[in-house]
Length: 355
Ligand code: F0G
Image 1 (cartoon, rainbow, N blue to C red):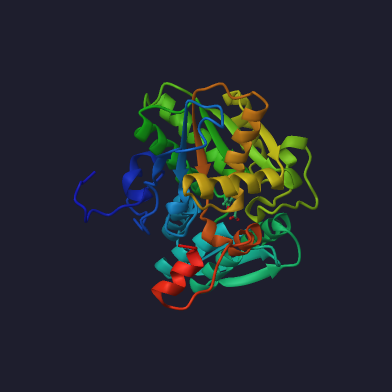
Image 2: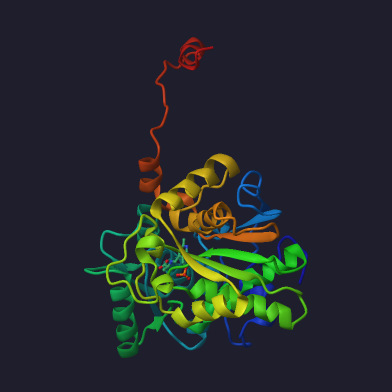
């Protein structure tokens, strides 16, 4: 790869040799991937670990990990002649699809569960110019509709049931192995529709096969307690959680998640909304990392395991899947801000500060 600062960045450039690209695949990019891996400053010990690293997927161009898979899915859709794409989404997939569609001159149709998508994500879908349909139902209903609609009309489905999404998302595992020099012992990840845990496991398995790593991480997936079908083993008809991104009752990649769990000797467990919000606040206040609630589920899970005495050192990576700015309403509802009004004078500010 060229080292020029002007060389194109992005998943299709950096990871071309591990992706199913052809000479006809358009090399589109919004600069996705190559996200920071940052060592924990405060929560490592509390999580009972020797090393805790955060993979900041919130640093992708639309603020979530979805861009890694979306860039591949959209490029392959264009390669096959598609002029339009569609997805069902709890918000991040739709923001990402809408961005790449705007960039590439495609029509984009997004089906979202009515009233349940965080404000920032809706703003993105609107700003990027997608056609938004609010479904009178939940994400699972929206995905069923999207599958049927794309089977019937000449529109490419870009949900993670599209294998190119998984291919793109697996590149995060390659990046982790590249940065750490090996796979970590554990990977903590929030689970909703289960595409991402499936993709990471594929990526880590490939890294081991290629000799890029010596370890297979234990995959530790965490679902919200009100939307934890992979924990109970049965679909949840009316999923509910403050972490709206993972408010999913019947994950499309169910078997992929179970495979990742069992082959890696890991687990998929539930964390309550209270535990998610505690981790959400700790990440912001102690680590300087403002993530969306779903992303905090990975750290909530590690804290929960640690409290139960189930983490015993070792190195873990927690995937922080999306940016806190996407869900300003949850943020403001979490805090009673200590804000003092002041005249625009030095004396006024000093008085306000009690100096
Ligand atoms: N974290 C965030 C911020 C998400 O947006 C999602 C999924 C997940 C975690 C879970 O990933 O579905 O691969 O298990 N969001 C999808 C969406 C469902 O429509 O944006 P998963």
